[in-house]
Amino acid sequence: MIINKTNDSNNVSIVLVSPEHPNNVGAVARAMNNMGISDLRLVNPCEFLNSGADGSKTLAVHSHSILENAKVFTSLKEAILDKEIIIGTTNRIRGHHKQLKSIWELDSFLLNLNSPNKIAFVFGRETSGLSNQDINLCNHIISIPTFGQNNSLNLSQAVMIILYEFSKFNYKNTELKTIEDPIANSNHIEKLKENLFLILKKIEYIKNGNEDKKWGVFSKLISDKKLTTKEVDIIQGVLSKIKNLIPG
View 1 (tube, one colour):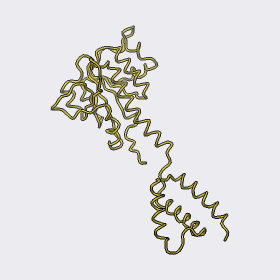
View 2 (tube, rainbow, N blue to C red):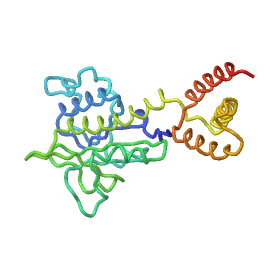
View 3 (cartoon, rainbow, N blue to C red):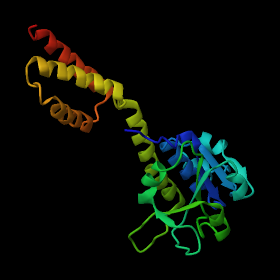
């Protein structure tokens, strides 16, 4: 299986546009830390580093470094200057803007991106969300479906849901890259078939006259299995043992 590993966590940024409450900024930092994302960007934020019960560090448990290293900008345009994929979040359908995608489509969307990509997830103000001008700076728009009477999520909840879906995708692809052996190449497969046919001839399963037909049958059988290099090596080892046990 070929995996398009597009989205290393180091390439991902969370951008908050004019966050109004320090506690929300702190909760976002904690959510980011939970999901392995560290680049927080703030556009015209509130005084988020103030100390006390209302300060951002109160809710940023074990995540103070994300707050302390947060980058502050005076405009969204400046904050996303180095990004290639800018995904804005909204719960409002705006007909003249880009096609609205559901969070459920994030996995397939990320899978189809070219590698590598620098991604920004952009979140708007707690009270009014992203403005039309903000939306115009994004090249993709995503929403989080809700099913109750209130469709407005807390800022940190929205960030956590988005990053959870992103991390599911990212972890799934990292896991496949790490533990799945590569598919055997044509050279390995042809050598396996040759070894198998040599044994089948020795035991007279394949006889003169039916070689081409049997070769086609076993070729399809082997190719359909999409054997990995490790699996081919194991089968080759078994065939070698069998070959040594056949007289002559």
